[in-house]
Length: 261
Image (cartoon, rainbow, N blue to C red; front, side):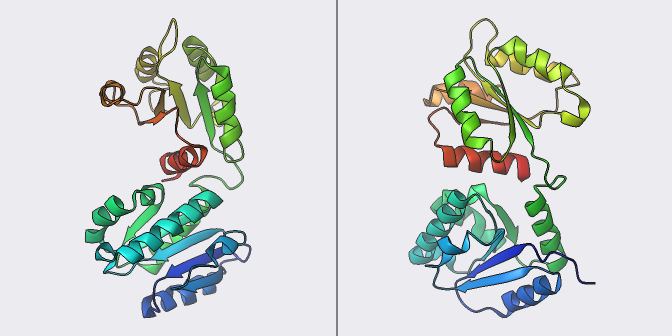
């Protein structure tokens, strides 16, 4: 049965012609997607980001040992990341760690091991396009930071992708979360590590002890980037951390990975 996905477009990026990818193209087109394929020459990629909803990158088996192909992958990931679009990378399972070391940017995107079943791929595309939630409903992020200027800046950076609330004190965060209706629940908390009166670690402990908030992912925000400072943050076992010096694009990519897989 043909699925009505005509409003969605998929960009397929391949280093060389592939019979397997031709099969992907055929099956995805039959499912109702518009397909745009770039083979080898990716100079049109930036233009394509304006019309494509999500990308699939089919990686060659020899990529870990080919610096030129790794450099190209780095450019691809940077371009797609800047566009805010999604990317599904398909490669050999044993290549993943080597590619990650060479191109750390791939951690912001989804990796699928070969061989990929077409039905699994279609399901993955649907989930990525929908953000694993109801279409049109933004996920909600609570920023807890006693520095309102920084909090407002981060809100401006992410408000197009997420619904964002700000509180400027630890106890205000607890009160806010306990009053939120179930159908408007917070999906993730960005929590300042260092705050007066009730600091980030204390708030984190209270969140984990209350059944109503125990399962909300918490990402610590910290201005201390030393090894010792980061180690103190990680000892608490949060769902992640971000340095306050992290650029906008990297914050968006990090949040996308945490919230959308």
